[in-house]
Image (cartoon, rainbow, N blue to C red):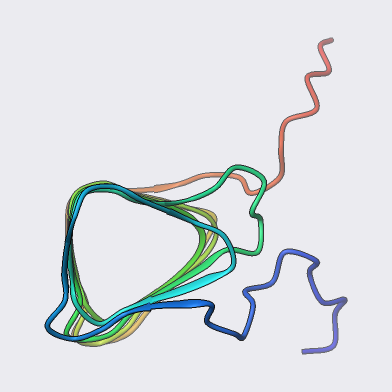
Length: 130
């Protein structure tokens, strides 16, 4: 609120949409913002260096595969491992069936996670030894 806004904040715009009733079979790599209202059978990941990549899953969305993005806002279902480099918001109708790695998390009442939740530091290691 009063602090400096992060350069890696989630972006507010959606560049691509997978609509309700659409099923994609295969891996998806994206940059920018992606909203999924349909179904994906395969992994969904942001391209390397896309630190502002944002994935939004509506309550109708379902992903069967791994997810690796900078920012994730989910109200849908993910069956597979989830890695979020920056911020993760799990809304009330969300279901994640798999392990989660996250830096910052917000979880709403009613959300379900069946898997391990592992905090990871969002700052890269400097590689300094003593």
